[in-house]
Structure formats: structure tokens, C-alpha cells
Amino acid sequence: MEDGKESALSKQLMVKTLLGYGIFGAVQVLYRLISGWRTSSRMRGLLEDMPAANGDGHDQPVGWINDLLANLHRIHDWRLEVSGGQAISKSLGFSWHPGMYVLIANDPEIVRHILKDEFNKYTKPDKALDPIWFYFQEFLGDGICVRKHGVGSEDNGEDWGHMRKVSSQIFSRKNFNSLMNEVFVEKAEVLRRFLQRSRGETKQVDLQSCFFNFTFDGIMRIFFGEESNTAVGVPNKYGKAFDTAQNNMKFHSVDSIGPYIFFSAFLPWPLGGRHGGLARWLWDRLSPRYRTMKSACRVLDREADRLVKKCRDDPQLPERRDLLALFIQAKFSADFVKQMVLHLIIAGRDTTACLLSWTFYELTRNQDVQSRLHDEIMQKLPPGTKLDMKSLSASEMPYLNGVIYEALRLWPPVPFDPKMAFEDDVLPGGWKVPALAQVAYSPYNMGRDPKRYTEPEAFRPERWIPFTAPSQHEFPVFQAGPRICLGMDMALFEAKTATVELLRHCRFEMVPGQDITYGDKITMDIKSNGKEEFLVYVSDW
Image (cartoon, rainbow, N blue to C red; front, side, top):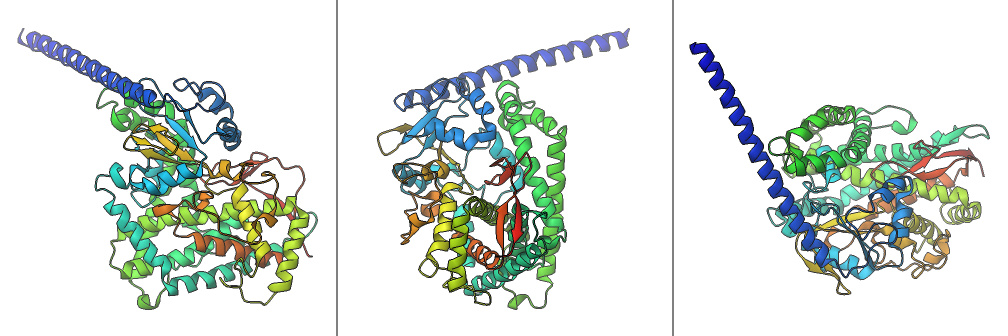
């Protein structure tokens, strides 16, 4: 009898507990939706006068999502079409959630405003509102590429400023810069010899893969002091793990946009709520892509631990010039060093590889440009001539510089860059921006603006001769203001070095029948016939 009473009491307690949690959850979700609706309504009100992006649905809450999904395979051209001809245009987000509000800016004055004049108001997106940014941080950790600054940060940007200051000091050191010169020249020669062995009318070479290997090998020596020879087929554990983590992160983050927002908005804590709660945690663990990403990240961490220990134990540490050694000698923690170097790899390795891939894509499409560039190289920098910053400068090699800048104009490695407003603001032109809206500038769009460039779709290196450095805000390929890319000179020198070394000895022709489009990396790589590759024939001049 007593057991029956206890069982009945337990059931009653369970029912009351579930009922209480149900009421608690319903109230919590209702409050979240009402709060989200109020915030979203306020955002729409402030954006009322801003023109909507061209196309269907951009003036209605997430009415543009189907159009976006239909154009994912050509997303950069789609953004150009829907925002072209407008200084800024809006795509409205959810009516019950302050996410997915995206404003595309194509006006240099607006770019200057968000990257310089009101720099402290615009920073990395809030990962609670942006699933892609959440998983990007899952991949990269808490380093400079994901750390907020200004009013959007908890410390008013002190950590970001410290990371930026340290990195700028490292990049300006003469011994580090001289190491870059040595390594880029050496690795370019290695790549050139590899390609020369692939000469012939029937031997197809994936040139994009070669460039990613070339930039990775250089980065490993310059950043870690570690010898790497992926350009000639020697596998590298760190490089393989990096690519695996990045690719799986990208696909999983896109797959998770809908579930992440649903869990955050419609499930009560702890099942849902901020960052998706337990439901998002379970969703991730059930995803093969997420598990593969995390497994690759653990490999990166172990390899970084090995490299840090190897560097610290090196009796020649004071003489070393690599980035890892310089950070360690500056007494930074191992975790700080590992994260900083990982972030600098994604900022410097992929971007330069993409620049080289699109440069040679244009050279193979425009054989007359390739021939003229070869002539300039053979006249001024024939085989055996030393390559350095001065010999590769715009004044010494104007056509080479024009080719590189024309590739950057048409195919910027980072074609679209969103910043989130963390305070209400007013842009040049009087456009109001509500807090939590993302203002994205598009180097891809700006480089194709017929108001700035005659025949913008044409590859014309001559438009950069004589060379005048473009305004950072007119040409934000390397960002601008306090965010200006620290590795800009390094990237340009690496790209020019590889281009000269290869064209001194080899001529390149695109393999016919390739359907060239955009790849699936974070940066703007090439995809050909569904694969991330760019096939060429290599021959002698």
C-alpha cells in the first residue's frame, strides 16, 4: 500500500515537473519571440527608407531566401545582380528574430565609414545570430580573425588591439621579412621544377592544387620553421588536417543555418536558446561533417603542440626567424601562439593561393597578356636574376603589377565581407542602420562597377599603368583603416615571385572543356566541372 502511494506521488511529481517545465518553456519561448519581433520590427522601421536589393522578396522578411538558394552556385554574380547600381541595399531578415538582416554596400564612402570612421561600431558578427560565424569560431578558436573589437566586444577591443599590435610588430621585423624573401624564391623554384617535369600535350596539371601546396609550404617554413614539401607530393599532417577541418566546417555551417535558428528561437532552455542549447549540441554530434571537423581540429592542436615544444627546445631558438620562434621569444603562452598562427594561415595561405589561381586562369584565357608578361620578365628579370621587393615593384615591373592588380580587381580572394553594427548608426547618404544588422561590403561588386572601370569584365592590365595605388576604400581587397591586412605586402610579393619564376620557364594553356566557377572554400577558389581544380597544359616557350 505504501509502495502504491509512493508510486502515485512520484507520478504526480513527474507530471507537475513536466507541466511546470512546459509552462516555463512556453513562457520563455513566447517572451523570446515577442522580444525578437519587437527588435525586428524596430530594425525594419529604421530601414524603411533604404532601397531593397533588386529581385524578388528582398523587401519582405527573408523573402529572398529561395532566390539565394537557387543561386548558391553563382552567389557572387547573384549579389552583383541584386545590389548592382545601388550605393547600399537591404535584404530583410526574420520578422520574429533579429537575424539575417544584410545590407550590401558598394559605395567607397560607406566602406570608409564602416572600416575607418566608425570602426568601433562595426565588428565580427554575433555568433548567437549568425550560425556560419558560430561554426567558423568552432574551427578557429578564439584568435584575431574571430575576436571582436569596439562596442561589440566585452573588453572594448583590448584583446583584439593587443593581438593586432603584436602581429604588426612581427611582420615589420627585418629578419622576418628577409626570411619571406628567401622562402618564397626557394619554394617557387621547387614548384617550377615540378611543373617542368609535367610538360607535354597530354599531361594535365591541376594548377590550383599546386598553388595551394606552394603557399602552404612557404607558410609552414615562415610561420613554424618546419620544412614542408607538399608541392612535390610529400604529405603534411598539419596541412591535411587544416583542409579537412575547413571544408567540413563550411558545409556543416550551411547545413545548420535552419536548425540553429530554430533551436535558438523555438526551444526553451536548456534544450534551445542562445547558441542552440542541447538540441544544437546533439545536432552537431550526429553530423559526420561536424565530427570530422572536430577530429581534424584535434590533429591541428596536437601538431601545433609538437611544433611549439620543438621550437622551445631548439638550442638555436635565439637565431631562428620564423613567426613561431618570434612569438615564443616574446613570452606569449602556447595557446595564444597556436591560435595566432592558425588564424594567420587562413588569412595568408588560402588568399594568396586563390590570387595565383585566378591570375593564371586569366593568363591562360588571354594568351596575348601571357606573352606580353613573359616578354617583360625576360627583358628585366631573366633566369638567374635575383627576385626581391625592389625588382618586383610596380616601377620596375609595371605589367606584372598590372596583371596582379587586375586579377585582384576581378577575383578578390575575399569577395564579400560582412560586419555587424552593434549600435544604431547613420551612413553617408543619410541611410539609417539599426544595431544587429550586418553591413557587408563587396570587393567583387566594386571591382565590376562600370562607373569606376571601363569595360569592367575585360582583363586589361594596362589600366594599372602607370601605377597609382588605389584608395583602400575604393579597392578594399585588403580591407582598410585599422583592419588593413598586415600581410598585404607579403601576399603581393609571394604572388609576384611565383608568377615570374614560372613564366620565365613555362607557358600555360587551359585544358579545354572546363566549366570554371567558384569553389567551396571560405576564400574564392576555382571549381571546374564540380571539382576544386584548374587543369592546364605546361609547355616551353
